[in-house]
Length: 74
Image: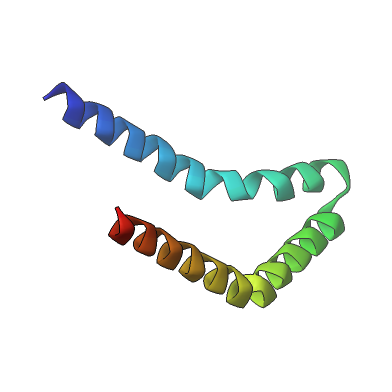
């Protein structure tokens, strides 16, 4: 019973981090440099993720395939 509560707490904490953590860098930049810098940061990081998703997906796929073959060998 205790394990279920702990897992639920962990899932809640991870979800909160995943939701709120991406908002921290633009907020800091907005406070220090203003809206233009925060908007520029979001534009550049969004473009980087948009243009890099193909390579990230290929890397992840190859990694999982390698792990699958390692598991079959054992």
